[in-house]
Structures are given as C-alpha cells and as structure tokens.
Amino acid sequence: MTAVQRVDLPTARRVVVKVGSSSVSGDAAANIPPLVRALAAAHARGTEVVLVSSGAIATGMPYLQLKSRPTDLATQQAAAAVGQNVLIYRYQAAMREFGIVAGQVLLTASDLEDRTHRSNAKRAMERLLGLRILPIVNENDTVATHEIRFGDNDRLAALVARLIRADALVLLSDIEALYTAPPDRPDAQPIANVAFGQDLAGFEFGSVVVNSVGTGGAATKVSAARLAAASGIGTLVTRADLVGAALEGQSIGTWFAPNPAPPDSTLTGALAVSSQAAAVRSDVSAAG
Image (cartoon, rainbow, N blue to C red; front, side, top):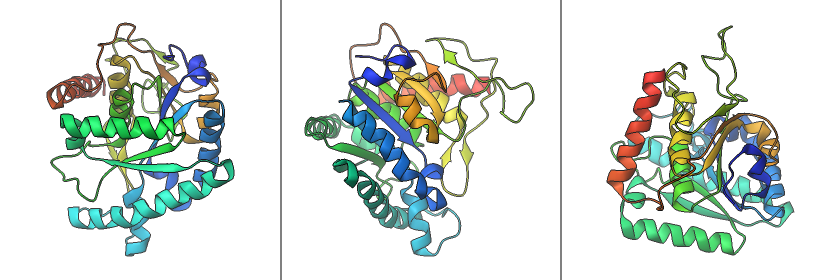
C-alpha cells in the first residue's frame, strides 16, 4: 500500500531506505548494526526492504592509505573496488543475528537508461525480494565515469524506488529534518510536511555538499524526494539514527506527500528520467 502519510510507513509493503557515506564509513561504521536492527524490525513485520547505501569509496580509503577522498577517477574506482567488498561484509555480519541475507546490486546510470538492462535489474531485485533477501544497492563506482553517473545516491534511491514501485522512500541524513534555512541560522524552522507540488521557492536548502567522504546535502535530498513523490512515492527525510522511529511511522523528519495521480509507469527511458530530474534540480536551485 502506498504510504500517503508517514504513519503509513509501518504497513508499507515495500520501502527503499538510503544511507550516506558519512553515516556508515570510518568511525561511523559503528552505526551499521543499529541501522540493520531497524531494517530487520521492518523486515520482520513483512515489509520488503531495499537499502541504498553509499560508502564504498570512503570505506576503501583507509585500505589504500588515503586520508581524503581521491579526486582522480582511477583512484576512486580502486577505492570503491576495495571498499564495496568491506561494506557488504559489514552489513552481512550485522544481519546474521536476524537470519537475513544481503544481496548486492551495483548499478550504473546507463543500466537504468537501457531498456534491457533496466528490465534485468528490476527482475533481479523483484526475485531477491520474493526470496526475502535484503538487496543492498550502490552505484557501480568501479565502472562509472564522471560523465555517466547518477551524481548522488539520493537520486539513485529515488530511481530505484520508481523502478521497483516502492510504497515509500526514506532518505537518511545528518539532520532530523529539513529546514526553511540553513539550520545554524536563528530564523531556521523545521519543515514537517511538503504537500505535492508545493512551491519551495521561499526556502533555502543550500547547494550540494562535497566533504571528505562523499557528496550530498539538503538540496540533493529535496531533489530526490520530489522526484520520488512525483511518481507517487511518499518520501521521508530524517536523521540516520532515527531510522527505527521513521519506519515505525513516528512524527519525525520532513514528509514529502506523494502525487495522488502518478503516471502509470516506472522508468520510461533516459530522456524522461533526465528531463524530470533536471526540472526538479532547477526548482531546488531556485529555492537555494
């Protein structure tokens, strides 16, 4: 059942959860067990859970003796190749006590633009979910290029949610909710709800943030949330350590209400995806 409100999350049939690099890499790797515990609770309720997890490059960096995120493509690919293996191992180790098996799904932007690849990816994830496997999705950084990539995993999560017709999307961040202005400003107020089609021009979400381990920021989450909502997928943005409360439907975070009359399709090709995403990014940029 499509989650129309955040209170519908506990009864949603299929939920995509996205977590960023800063929440699961380096010292923050200690956050993986409690994250998995929350996902396992939803899984036990019968919800089909898909996790979109960043963190491959950041997790691989220490193994390559790197102190900051590499800027050249080859080293990024090398770090991702090492880090993805370690990241999946950590997730599977945390899932073991719950009897859950993880399934790794690595995608590139071209996979979702090509009809055959897109169909194969959808079929594989549907089968994994049918077998009660918990798919863990990430961009395939070892083959992605600067020119052909999703840009950030918030957008990847929204596209995956569209692909598998998820009932809800949960985007995990470093802050409890989105704000009307940068949170450190005294006039900033948390945003509890965003109606479908609501004009956000009066709010300041800033620009994309690039830090030592990944890329993201409030602007990318707004873009992804509106992309998912346009497809009829209600989306919640909240802090990573509140994921359990989020999946229980508690009154936290910022809820983007879904389109009440979404188009009857999943991904319809590269042009549709790019044009819609570009329109959303334009709206957010105007608001920043």
